[in-house]
Length: 234
Image 1 (cartoon, one colour):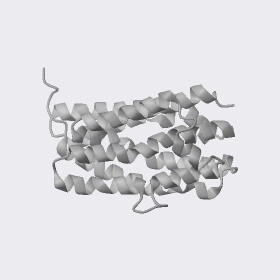
Image 2 (cartoon, helix red, strand yellow):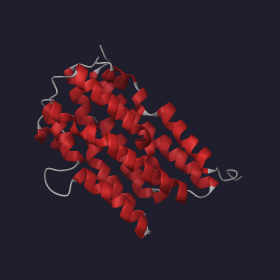
Image 3 (cartoon, rainbow, N blue to C red):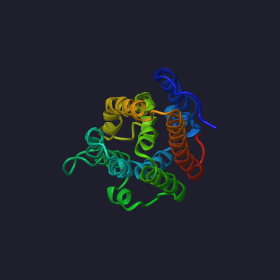
């Protein structure tokens, strides 16, 4: 049985956006509590620690996509994502900015880098994403990155929440969130165009939707592991 006729761009886009509108982790009670200022310092720090494992594996995931892609023009487009997170030199990049967030919240850089406090469930969720990128066709792995479609609004809300409710976190620690407001929009536009272009059968379109569902699920599982370990909001 075939998956049906190829969806036009608008219909395909709507299918992808529907996934985020219903499954993105901004709808998790822990994130809602964060935005409403109902988390205590221990909960915020627990989230920073466990989310860091995801942050440090983003360039590993992107390197896997590049290694699987035979198209030079696509590799050129995607390569910047690795340097965006690793930085082009010491003291730069998204991983460095997340380490600064940890320091701004009173966490040790050494503890973050060592994985101290990393929950097994959070590790498993992130590792499953790296494995996905390594083993799936590269256009499907690209489609899994489209949670970035929903990241700019999440980042704006997070900045507002931290500036209003978590003033004990030093303001210079919010640089990662601020940079992702614009960076995620550029990345999502790029990923979306690649998905439209290379998911060019209905079967590939359906796999792309499933990939985005998978990504939303693992992000949800990561947050859920923190909520279970550190308790619900006040």
